[in-house]
Image (cartoon, rainbow, N blue to C red; front, top):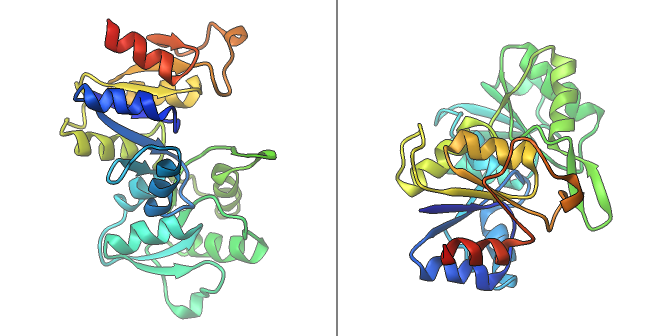
Length: 250
């Protein structure tokens, strides 16, 4: 069985799954951070995660052909994923049409988005570049509360360019393909796995895309008072530890 955990969760719960022979992956739509940084963050929670982090930047990079030229309107996580695929990367903060055409524009969450960046990215799309969004999340959670997410930035570029982006992250197929490849399942699903998360509209939909069961935890944005939700989860638990305990005892 493969478990895809959308939350850092409890270290003991993850350790119990691994001791039971389960593969655990950490799926995130965060395309800003490099993979190593996200692995280090999980390790600070007591969860070793080397090779087990899947990001929307990784999913977006799969949609770009090695050797293509990409204009990045996003963060270092996108740059890392694209360069690892053999793509030539340009920065939306500086690239101009006179620097040559690009094949694709990749948009993700970042805090330096401004009018000039939108002008350059929308202009590249209008000149024929494909438009990719790492995800379409309207908001991004921070300790201070929700702020505009990568989807809000992608929507601005798309509106200016008059083109709808292809979205790579949860709950879309490109990210599911990364996970299926890692666990050895076909793109059609069929693996006896579970997607665990706190957002039915994203995590539940992604479980369906993966062909996995959906485990809803009530320790995030969804509370017990919000039930029932759609799509209906296969399992509901107060938190990750409770969900894992129930599954392993069943």
